[in-house]
Image (tube, rainbow, N blue to C red; front, side):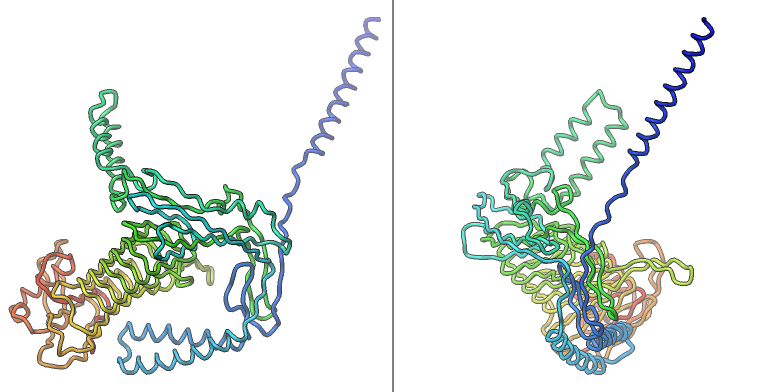
Length: 539
């Protein structure tokens, strides 16, 4: 009897185990992770004989293939011509003649493409505009953090913000919440997290840390070092620290704020196109400002336009890459300070201009030809400066700079880019310099007979050229035995002889080159130095 009971119990347990196992297996089958749903891709197509000209929000513009190929050919010739000019392979009059011809051809083809272009937009763009106004605090310090910024001066007493919202859809009208989620947020207050702490606050914190007996010496050193570096990082915002400021930012465009992607393709059977994703929500901000003490701009990537503004302006850590888009400042009554921000044009500034762009904005990338991986930088970003009524101090890692009409001191360090200086009148009676490591330096003196400042054009491993053939221009070759880094270098170049300083022995020229290269105090003059590039002084 006991044996039967044991067998029955064992059999019952086995059946239960099999039943439970079958439930678990079935449950595991039903709980298999679902494959993620592939996003819907909106598609649009251009005629077969059309080629993409440029992308736009929601799609792309296409033109006849023959027009686009002609346009690319002219742009390629312009690029090669600039290389020839920078390398000194072509004379000034030849360059001017070819440049004029290519620009005339470019105007014609641009007109043809403008009349012919068609828009292929798989995603539909819906638009809405919202306007807000507010009064500035008594300090009149303004901070703007947004993309697609247009800043305009006006006679009103308030700050007016016009927010243009754009929503991409598959053709259906967007929900009201999409537009409502994008908004301008204005706050007044003290913002140490954005502009940094005051010097007094930092000094007090350092004193507290150094006299805290609970902390180890190692931790004190680390903490004090961090406080001082933080202070240095926000040094350019010192005037804003500890003061009430007005801050504007656009909310609703980031992923964490609910923005998502839409995917589309705009192609042509023979002309390529675009394929990828874009944010659903977009916005551009136009801000009308009265006279301010100082304005900070930041966060832009696709566009910046500053026009007729009466204020000192600070721009920090902004901009996309390359020569696409519009990034310009025009008619500014005040000083301009820029740090690592993309700009294409600065014109008509009544104040000093100080720019430090040590982060290259050129479009580069990688390629893998013939089983070889290559990383390379792109072409230099072109930036022009014109009609600056004050000092111009520039430090670029790599850019194609064009400078014209500066009333104050010119101090340019363009490490690996090309620089062109043009002036109709004599420069200010100050020590000017243009320095490069490997880029070319080209100076055009429109009226050489009226130019009175002494000039030194020097290179260590490159070449120097000038068409100013007169008794005041002579060549020199010297060895440098007094370099700041302790090295001995060879310099060669051309020099003017309009002052006693430049008529003296070679040792004075050695000192002049050293002082100019290291930006030390020296007498008035124009110093053009490229270690491994071409230096040209032309009329």
